[in-house]
Image 1 (cartoon, helix red, strand yellow):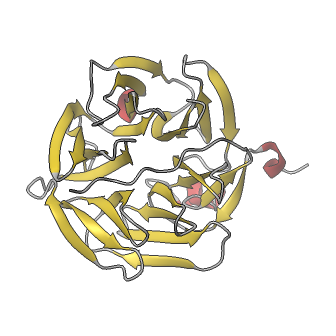
Image 2 (cartoon, one colour; image 1 turned 90 degrees about the horizontal axis):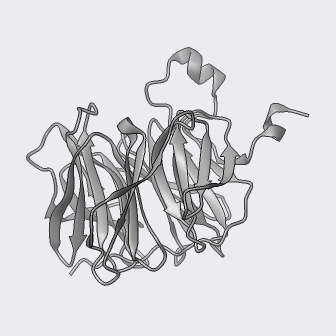
Length: 295
């Protein structure tokens, strides 16, 4: 029996993303879209494999919201912009962090209402420099501030609650949200404090309300039940999983982006697949990504 036999994930696409992030499944295109944030790249690959499309951006981008069968709204270090997934061209929609040269976008997800939650953080993870923002129908609003590394943005299927975290504090919060607007309807309450699991990074919530989180530094994706108890632990062959996403024709599989950021040459030699995209050996009832309301 090999080491790989003890793991819970298989290689789906081998690449060397410095900071693979923001995977999102586009059912209309039958593809998975994701970013290499630090190298200013966006990738797209069919669920069934084959050729991988790569677009080079002129800014760092980290999160995508689906618009239609050809376009996605992406969060960058200077704006929210429309990306043509076929041509690779972009068009600014609304400024975002354009005068904050020491900040960049980080995590993001679309609420069932069509609101896009996006996070910002210091480019060197400066303490409490980040925040979480809300965008809907052309309006951009700051929701939460004084967060060092805002992550884990995800929503319950009915849109009545959101999750988010500060990776630096290894803390996950849950906050009630308005199903019609995606705005908070109360104060955040701590959901989990992580320890040996690693730091909470990107996350998704399945149709059964379970929260699946990539645990940076923990070599695993953890799944928690709505009551905070552990449902599953999926081990990966790399130490820095960054974000899971439902994908496949039936959205019943989970892809996970990973990173090799801050790793030494010796560490990369020991984790040669770091920065690749993996597929968990699990079946799940996934939820389709909502389309964003640009206005």
